[in-house]
Length: 215
Image (cartoon, rainbow, N blue to C red; front, top):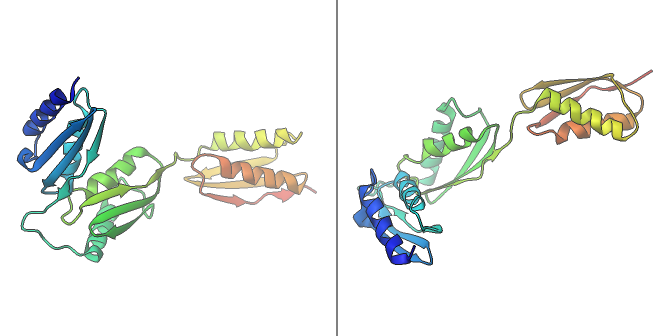
């Protein structure tokens, strides 16, 4: 599809998109790459404009240069905005407590941390996008699945078998992202191998090594 056709289709789609004032958004197309300019009333509208554009056939990519211009231009300082964002995240039951940290600079919110599931990462973004004062969101939250006892156990046993050992004296308990190793080993090297294998399992963020040397 040629650029002229893509340009027309993007404009038409933006015209009928909910919440968007298409008259305030500029569109240019070059080799299937669409550049969006202009301004919107809140950060949520930026996301809508980008998603609407990406679903048009022939669009190969989007360069988003839209700015947020809030009605009546409410002045929200970074410190106050950071406090407001932190409170919203804390109140969201979908997001594990103390799993996300944030930084605000000129209205741009940068999110960091780690959650077990992608929908929790998306929930943080969704919760903040409508807050007055937010001009952009950089979501760097990592997604790591919860640790599974069977998988952790298998990794540990596989590591020990590679060292020509096959002990059945190690017990593995998984509580959320914490792994507890209990039991006994023949030599201290096996203890180190077990602990290293536990750390390598997806989702593990803490290891409590209670292994002892067999008498």
